[in-house]
Image (tube, rainbow, N blue to C red; front, side, top):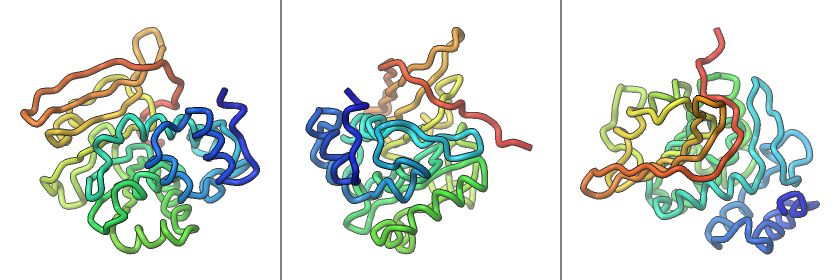
Length: 230
């Protein structure tokens, strides 16, 4: 189904995904309509497929971005705080900003362990007027750090935590530091590779009392969440 959803323009791509139920929520459709994929994908931006962006990283297919945003949507309310680990091209960071920063109160942090990718994401989001406004207004920030440890701010911790955490690379475990940084309530979307080399999405929820539940979802194939190259 997904390969049938490519288009000639961003509007056509997103409309095709929505009409084929690969985007199921109008809020996600509208957010993706506001983020031109041509600013983030180096070639064939309106094709529903992943593409390399350098440094052994990829920009995921649009339907996978829609799936991740849909999984986190209950926690992507205006004013929410979102951590996008392995932000890469910056595309999904920008989509999250559309969902939480429109009233000027939300916060999205794109976290990368490679400086060149951090710069790539920040440069890409500046290509659109809306993204540039989020960045310059402080609603969006791109930082460098070890995604396996989450992000507590440059000063060592702001104490606020995250309503939603998206991990865009495959981990080898459900990292406890990410769970600790999750608000109550809050949710993590994270691909995890098992001992056989198979990868699955895990949805980790923390309820308002702080109880944590973990649920395995669909099988996927992501690049690994690793150390920065030396």
